[in-house]
Image (tube, rainbow, N blue to C red):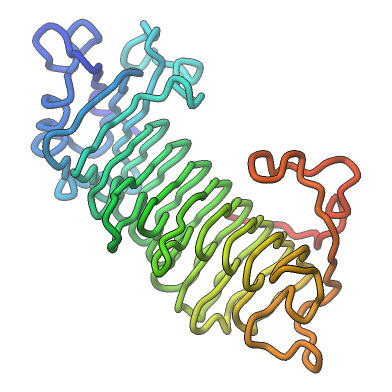
Length: 340
């Protein structure tokens, strides 16, 4: 893939603000103008650690990348001196402490189809804080919707065939994240989405989702959806939600190797294919009939095969969900090869 141009962005900007070097770095207004009116597929934008404040929407949804030439927004450390093609992976602001912070206020940060967004920290109160189009990738970002008014807010939203990987997602009064059909939601930490009617960690649209290796902590519902086709829920942790997995259909869902601990109502709220899941202290206790499913008579229809109960022994429950060496979960799940 030929990269047409590299651009450089800092909080203060520099020189002529053309973005062709750190000495001529764009500031936030110049970056916004470029994204909305001039960006072309395949460009790479390096954004230095700092604080950026939006005074209007950033909406480049009319300026798409392509599957072959995605447009990239990559955050780098404040001390980075390498430029353009010489920026290396070690320059990236991968740690939470050196991600650039975007104070979105009441504005939206929205990019077009086939965009890659890496290592940003965003907080705002719009209907959506960060939104990517079809085929997008959001990786190692933090997105926090802090709107004080309940409504249809998302912290992070993606189009069809998009992926959200290794992100932290919070939504004070709305949904955490949503993806359209064929979305991939992997290795994310979703927490404190507690609105009484909209506090879903992950709300899906359409079918064929892959939801794996995530932690849902203190959410009204961990996952909620209405789809009934080919959705995989694998190796997730649901901790102190109301219901771990809920929805209105779910007939085509496969839920395997998930840990359900301390969920107020139940682990699952429907009958679906569930195999080798682990339950502990849900619905106030660890009794199987109330531990696993809501509204299902599990005394006569035992849905889960090889189900386990007992303390999963998280390293630090509520903050570090890795398993201690003597956890009964270690080595006890179903072995699955996952091609994603």
